[in-house]
Image (cartoon, rainbow, N blue to C red; front, side, top):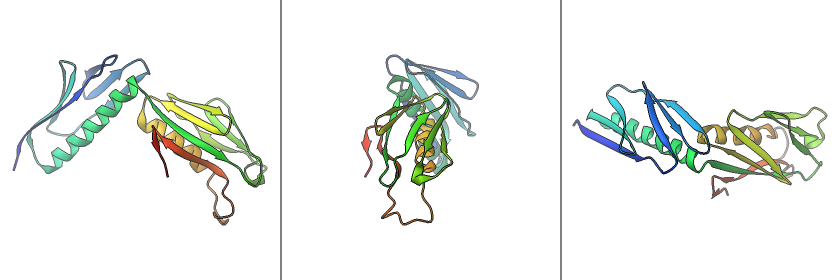
Amino acid sequence: MKKELIYNAEIPEGAEANLEGRSLIVKGEKGENKRAFHYPGIEFRVEDKKVIIHCKKATKKEKSIMGVFRSHVENMLKGVVKGFSYELKICSGHFPMSVELSGQDLVINNFLGEKKPRHAKILDTVVAKIEGDKIVVEGCDKELTGQTSANIEKSTKISGRDRRIFQDGIFITNKDGKQVN
């Protein structure tokens, strides 16, 4: 059964949203997010401090797509006002590894006694800081911030050794305020 669906996302104080064609541009004090949204029959409007997602004849599929779009819009709005932050912990038990920032690259030296350094790419608009044995990754785009954290964690992945014994690496401990078990 097809019916009309409307989802609203409130624009918080300190943020502004504009539509340029099919792209939504959100600006705030932490930065700017831009994303193109396209699906046949789903329209976007910006009115009265709200981003309105509208579909005249929505089926189950359009309803699910609209829910995904609403989540993306809410994350964009939250990111430009509050930002997203991930924490990673540096754990080295066997060999003392050193971690340093080099431009848009995180360099990990002496990981498990390796002579060749390992590298992790820090994506655009994301800032990484090393504070002792912790790495803090911050940004206004949730996807780029999470992907940068995953790049850092993946760069110290161990294969061919027993993980119960070789517990060295860099691990995500907090995902935007949520404790990771």
